[in-house]
Length: 453
Image 1 (tube, rainbow, N blue to C red):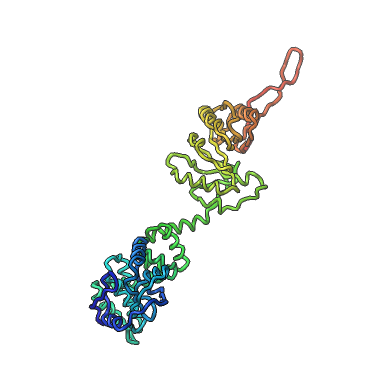
Image 2 (spheres, rainbow, N blue to C red):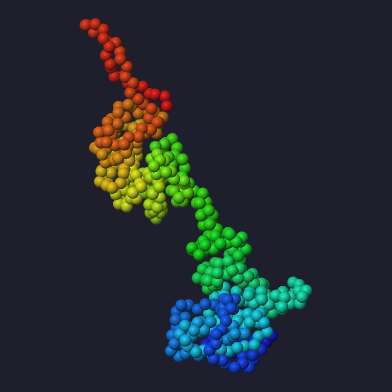
């Protein structure tokens, strides 16, 4: 087949076999007719940009459709955009029917014509060369008992005509087959974006992606369309998403037994994946204690916003948010289903926390008091709604510390939660006192004893 002759079909230099050109010359130029669009043929032609399409439309509206539409058996081979614009604007157009033996010849004609373009991407050029190889190595182009040498001859022939190595042709063939497979799985637009470079994925990754099982392939396609630049990146994102579907809250341990659940905030799907209790059920079953300080130094601000958004979208839970960076509390727009608080284990922290919490309104506030270090006196516990008294130490605090905090909390009307690890209790005993008037019993306060845990 002679592929050296050329013919100008529109404003681009295009390569075409001489027999095809002769076929064009022998046909009449017909007036406007209804033409067929073959999706496989159309896919072989790289899409023009929106700007180029608007310019073409403007030219046709102003000057008419100068270049004819090339067809084979009433099916468009070249001129899809011109045909669309003319149809939408009722503009007359002309056609050049060409005589070809079969569909494979039609595909070859389109590929030859497109390879004459100068603005092809590397992927587009590889696809066209590979597609031509895959088309010509079919049975119609080979003896009935074809062997490896037949394929080698085909690759060498195309390599010479395309001015590349035969190994490159065979690699391009695998790439083209992968693009066609992805076109069937994800639609032509995805594959066109791969070829144009709008979606950047290496040829090796494209081939590997096409070989994946269909369900995994569809999931990876979604990750790539969402911005993954490499197949490995898409696989990591997919694995992370699969794992996140299994993320749930953890049952609260004895150190935070005032809540039913604890939440590792890196597992953003946990509030959605954990079965929520009935709203009329025990309040504790809805309480979720955040394991991390989402305002701590080093905790990314965008991650903090994600956590807050998840809490807003999870009204079935009540979240307990604690932090040491109290200045961040007042500047935050809190969801209604949040308790904010801090841990106080010294007098300095009590005075510091009171200043911040007293100024915060429209959100419930809690304080966790650890009394193992020293006695604590607040300027006013009314800055809080809920006090949790606990003892993280093996040594129990003095009873007077506990009693003082209880009196402050009751005076200010707080909800009080006494954790089981605070085992100290008052234990007063009567003792006999000898006095001049005789013996009598008098209740005398003694040091409190500790109850067994």
